[in-house]
Structure formats: C-alpha cells, structure tokens
Image 1 (cartoon, rainbow, N blue to C red):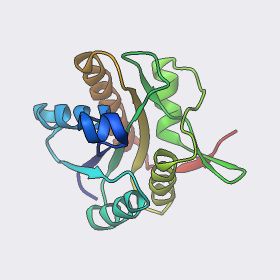
Image 2 (cartoon, rainbow, N blue to C red):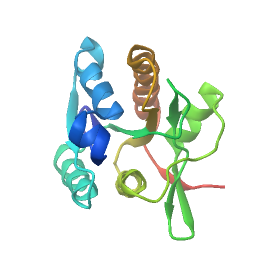
Image 3 (cartoon, rainbow, N blue to C red):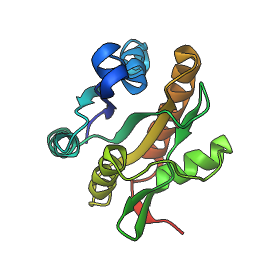
Image 4 (cartoon, rainbow, N blue to C red):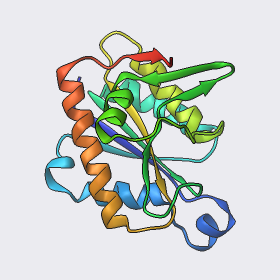
Length: 180
C-alpha cells in the first residue's frame, strides 16, 4: 500500500462548467498539488461528473492501492467558505460511513448531518467505501466544499482534514462501518 489519493470533479453544469470552467473541488485539488509535504506521496485524479466517475475511481483504487483516499466535491447548499466532511453515503435504504469520517467529524466538532444527496458524489463515496471494506485497504473520506467563499481558507481546512486522515490511516486500518 503506497501513498494517498486525492480526487476532485471536473467542472459541470451550464454556468460553472461550460461558461466558467470552474469547480470548487478542482480548485482545491490544484491547491493541494502545490503544498509540498501534502503533495508528497500523493496521486491526484480528476473524475468526470457522469457514470464514468465512480468507474474511474474504482480503477484508480485497484491500480494504486492507496493508504488513504480524500474525495472532494462541491456543494451549492453549503454556506460560503464551508468545508463539510460527509458522514455517510446512501445505498438504497442502507447508510455507509467510514471510521475515518466519524473520527474526523468528532475532532472538528462538526454536526453529523449529511448533504451527500444521491448523485455522483454519493456514488463516488459508495465506491471508495466499498473498496475500504476490503482487507488491507486504506481509510477514506468524502469532503464537500462550498461553491462560494475563500479558497485559501478552504484549502487550510482541507489540508488539516487530509493530515488527520493520514494520521488515522497510519494508526489503524480503514474500515467502512454501518452508520448508527
């Protein structure tokens, strides 16, 4: 098992995708690429906002076998400047959560609500949680970032989350557990 994987989504939608060519998660992925020690031992991937996104992630997980995975997505429902660790992913009537997400949410004193929805962010999180349940797999967390707000402040928060995730992955194996 080597390094860690950080993913973001490509720009999408009429305004943010076609006109502005922006995605908050992509902005932060680019910021993380330039942060020295954070970028050391990291692989970075841009996922399409389509059915191909979770499939691309599955292929990356299989080939890279990372120690930890940080998936980033943007949300227009968060207050400006917000960074939110998603506590769970939804599969039908079942909820799945990572032990790393639970730990980091407690450390950040973040509320446990979920804004994951049932679209590509959720499907991506389910893919990485399914992978993390396999013996010997790493820890995984999905983080939503607000569309609006200071990218510099968001980058600081996401960097701290990544450090916590890496520390968690060194201290215990990644395990996806049912939400309570």
